[in-house]
Length: 184
Figure 1 (cartoon, rainbow, N blue to C red):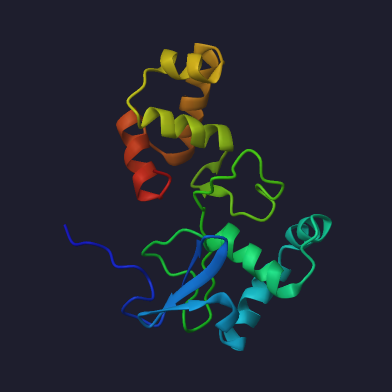
Figure 2: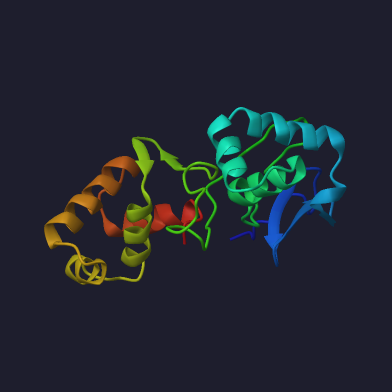
């Protein structure tokens, strides 16, 4: 199997990522600080952010009022995973992604700024993402229910909803889907 190269390593795409609280991007094989981004690309990100007024309002309410700081937060929440999928293309296409954020469950911006996990038949919830991660650890439904403090029936309903939303009918299918979609 051929290894996937990070976007921007060998091409003109942009791949944003966060390291130690700073935002960087990979483009044409070089790593750059976010502050050094071309004004045209910066404006594309600004246009993308402005299409989401709730996100702007949430940032302002949480003290992020500087426009560059807002764009950095937007990049962290929507492009923060370092992966092989381009976040911004040279022809101006912005591709937001679901980010594996360590602040899920405690972040004031959750599902407001960050990209929800929209799938073929709905949106995957935070609880469903938790369950998918536990399924990937080869836990039985009862073990997952006990771990989360829910009934086995509730666990079954969650799993059934996940299967319907992503279009599969087994735990193995859920795990395969989760790997393909960078949840695991």
